[in-house]
Image: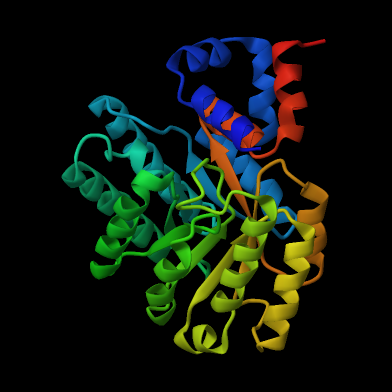
Length: 318
C-alpha cells in the first residue's frame, strides 16, 4: 500500500498531470465522484441536500501547494465568501483549509495573516447565523514536514480567541504526545488515519498498526477527563468496525451523542452516513468544491489500491 500511496502522492503534486487531467472532459468523472461542486453555488446546493438527510458539512475550497500570491489571495477570498454564504443559508460555518494553499510556501507571516483573516470571517459569520451550530476553521494536516507548522498555526489562532479546530493523524507515532495537551485545552480535534507515506521511524506503516493507533487515540479522546474538559472529538473514518467500537467506548464513558461526531468524505459510503444519522449520531461530510480537483481526487484514490479502478475509468472512458 505504501508504494501505491507514494505513486498517487507524486501524481497529486505533478503540475503536468494536473493540467492534463483537469482539462480532459472524460476525467471529470473523478471530480464528480469526490467533489461537491465546481463553484460555491453548486457546493451550497450539495450542502442543502446533505442537510435534508440530517447530515452536516465541512466545505473545503480546493487547492494546495500554492506559491503564487494572486492564487493565494483568490483562495483566501473564496474561503471567506464560503463562510459568509454558509451563514446566510443557515448552515454550520465550518470550513477546512490546507496551510499550503494559503501561504505556507511563502512565509510564516503570510500563512498566519491569511489564516487569521479566514478565521475572523468564520467568527463574524457565525454571529450572524441564526441558531446553534459547530462553527470553525478546521486545519487539515499534511505530511510529516508540515506537522509542526500546522500545530504552531493552530496554537496561534486559539491564542487570539479564534474558532480553530485541528486534524491529527493516527499513523504518526508522535500523535499521542501531540494530543495530550490539546485534550486539557478543550480543543476540537478531527482524527484521521492519515493518507501520506512515511517511514517506520516516524509512522505506523501496516494497516493493523494504524488501526490500533486510531483506536488507542480514540479512547484518549473519549476519556472522562476529556469529557469533563469540554473536549470535542471528531472521528474521520469510513471503517465500520472502528465506528462501532468508538460508539461503544463513548457510551461506556457517558458521552452524549451530541458531544462528538463522525466525519466522512463526500461521495464515500453515502448510505452508511445516512444509517449512522438515523441512529442519532452526528455525521459531518467533508465537501470539497472548486475546479482545482486533481490533487484531491488522486489522493483519495491513493488511500486504497482498490480504488485503482476509479482512475482507470477516468483514463479509459467507455
